[in-house]
Length: 372
Image (tube, rainbow, N blue to C red; front, side, top):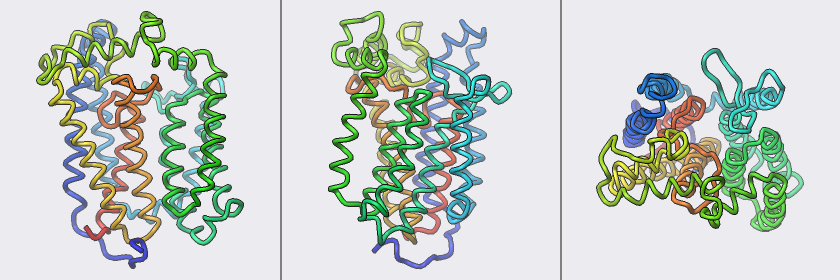
C-alpha cells in the first residue's frame, strides 16, 4: 500500500505549488480584512487599519511558524503527540474556568494573553489530528474491531467534542468531529460502524439543537430568514445582499456597501460575502480555485507519503481545512445555518490563522518526504 514505503531523505524544497497557494490566500486575506473592516475599525478604534495591522501581524508570526514546522521532521510530532494532546485538553478545560476563559458572542472560548487572546479549541483540532494519526497507524490490525479499535478513538473524539460544547462552540466541534471521522474511516474502520454512529449522531445533533434556543433560531432563520429579518435571519439576508450585486466583476475593491454596518463584523465569518460583493463571481471563483489547488496538492502528498502516520496526518490536515471551507462558504451563500466558522487564511483571527499555518507547515514538511 502507499504508506508502506521506507523512510527516505527529504527533498531540498517542499511542494512549491502548495506553498504559493498558501501565500496567495494569505495575501488575499490581508487585503480583504482591510477592505471589509476599515469602516468598522475607524468607527470603533479611530484607526481604519486596526484589524488589517493585527491580521498582518498574525500572518507574519504564522508564516514564521509555518517555516519552522516545515523544517521539523513530521515524526517529531508523533513522538510528542500524547503530551500535545494533554496540553490541549488542559487548555480546553481551563477556558471553562471563570476568570480564565473570556466570553465573546455568548461563548466562553478564549483565554486572554496580554493584549491578545487564544482559542484553545482551534489548537485541539491539530492536537487531536496528530494523536489520532499515531493511534490509527499503530492500530491497523484492530481498527475493524468496534471494541478494540473503533470505540477507543471514537471516545477520545467525543470527549473533546463534549468539552467544546460546554463553551459552547458547535461550529468548531463539527469541524473536529468531521475531520476525525474522515481519518478513522480512511484508516480502515468498518462502514457498518459508521452507519450506526450516523444514526446515533443524528439523534444527538437534534438534541443539541433543541437544547439551545439560539440554535433553533439559527435553523429557522436558515429555512426562512425573512421570518425574522432583524433578528436570527439578519446575517444571512445581509450576506446575500452583499453577494447578489457583485455580479460577474464585482463593485470594485473597497466599494462594498454591506460593510457600512449592515453585515456585522464582516472581516470574520462573512468575509467571503464582502469579497464576492467587491470582486464578483470572478474573484470568488479565484479564491475557491486556490482552495481546490490546496486540496489537490494535499491529497497528492497524503497518497505519496512514506508511511501511514504521515499519510493520515496529511489527510487530517487537508480534511480539516476542506471541511471548514465548505461549511463557511455554505453559510455565506445560505446553504447552511450560521455556525461561526471562519474561512481559513482569509478571515480575521489570530488563533485560527496561526493554527492553519502551523498545520500546513507540517503538511509541507511531509511533502518533502513524499514521492511527488
